[in-house]
Image (cartoon, rainbow, N blue to C red):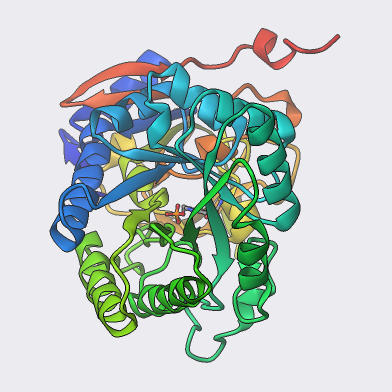
Length: 429
Ligand code: LLP
């Protein structure tokens, strides 16, 4: 079970709400998000940020790419979070939800001019820049508007999570950011430091996702402080440092996530050591957790439609969703935990393949999944689907996107309406 799930009267519950009742009321497939779990993760990150760096000395920016809708942005505003937005669409959603523009950081690797102009017009607090062409475009657009943008440079610290000891340089082969070790980053910083419309205030890195180790984060911090010192030696004073997101969560029992405070404790200790050694003031610190805030809070509900046993090979349990609402198995072979919500107290005595509904053999939610005996009409729940599921949904086969409900203390409310066939064809001319 994840943090937000439990079993009551033989049924799976999310945030205290019975999944069978939710499926009946809102239909399936259905994304269910537990507000208390989301808020608890925000508070855990914020409390450890305050504890490690001091109150007001940093900002926890929720990476909206993990799960973005107005209701989520309202919760983020209420929790006093920042937002790390990756596109004009995410910025629009946050602003439409009343999220304060100055707490938005716009981080992406190939921004359109319209998006840059939109972010500047709406007073977005910081723009994280990925390449030299983008820096010149930001400078021209900001200068044309008589404005100055607080810019953060996205860097490749050359740290690879999971295998970082063996492959310290592996990550310079990435489409994101400026490489430090080739000198590219320093050249870019020197080139743009004096550009009109640009206040080169910060540096940023993001070393990967679903990371369960602390050492790569510590190493990345060390590399970043080294670079900040190199900039200082060139007369460029850095005030903001973002160390990105990437904190791992539990999808199955094989995942052993650390408490978020543990990362922060170790990384901040290393950061303080670096500042002391290099004679630097501690910059304003930012992190950008996405998955760790949204994923554990989410469960997706499906109605089982079919059961096919191919003797000696597989039992396929066919559900009314799949890669359109959760493409992560098809894309990454990601593993999930599944439960039959109306048989949640029964033993998982079968090993099955959970199959999606689209015309694609690869449309599976998982293979080799332990599950209760499932039959047509049962409600299948897939746990820890709050991040990179709804946000990566597609319309393959013109399948309308599923609805999202937000649950709090056992009560559900609609956060995103289920799409209709008309919605799917809305922009057809
Ligand atoms: N900051 C930056 C600059 C990022 O690129 C990302 C994720 C994050 C923050 C948030 O990382 P998180 O805390 O969520 O790990 N679609 C993939 C995940 C892609 C992550 C991309 N960047 C998946 O479903 O696993």
